[in-house]
Length: 375
Image 1: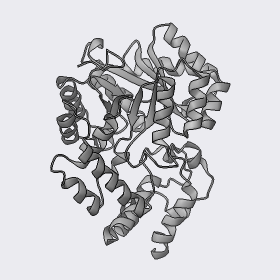
Image 2: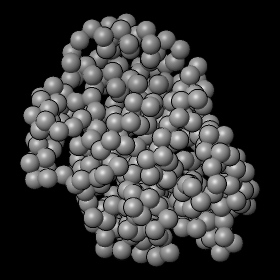
Image 3: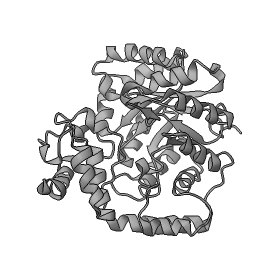
Image 4: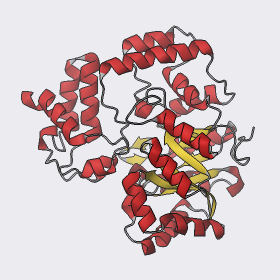
């Protein structure tokens, strides 16, 4: 079945390659190859990457496990122009050409201006990044031009008004963020509808947060007797009519098999399932958890080598479960080879790159108050 928005895309489920199977800090090529083969054998073909994913190893892994093993017509490959890899316009083309070479392709099916927000967008405008990418399209090196986006709906509306050439928009979209005032998933989706732009969904399970549910929330979904927490999260996103593709970052074959199981013959959520999701949202809202998706962009900027997403996960886990494991992991795993939360010097570099626009410095103080006072 072809995608209703772009005929070359099969179905409405994509392989997000920001999180890959790992072994000894390297991509597990044997496992990734099996996952790629299984994905394609089951009728899917959309792969998403970026130059910095998996510490720069994602593009190379796709070359070795996908593009060198399949004819070009067998897959759709999306890559991105990321802000931390260029600071001058003349750096864009060499970066783009290097991405093509590393991925082992002559063109990208989709090329996105990465992680656009109000500040990053101004940089891209100043350096004519959109215009440069559109030149690549004229040259046949990009088939479709788009953006990935992390900001409020009014910023997205501005971008799409100023650049109607944008063909597709990738947004963070899941049932917890749907009405969240800091993310505005619903409003961003509606802006895309207004401008006639199909949506690619990222973070449908919110970095795994919608898989490891609080007991009360899990009980609600278990009562449906029909699927896993991941299945309801991904199907929620895919049920919206203007959604072209839902991306899932799958770290092992088990995740791949599970996701294919409910997306191969996709069925939208029914009214009973939607009501259950609303109840789960109420539980999440009552817990006041840190909405970190563990993209780890912040760690590229931290001069104190603080494992920020892991420390946030520790605090969230403490709030949810209040057990001794969290203290152990904080002290012996996540701060053993890096900084503690109290080591934060509040330089703000992490906040400049955070797609969720979290007040990271303030939140690290909360983490420090919980864990470092015991050290």
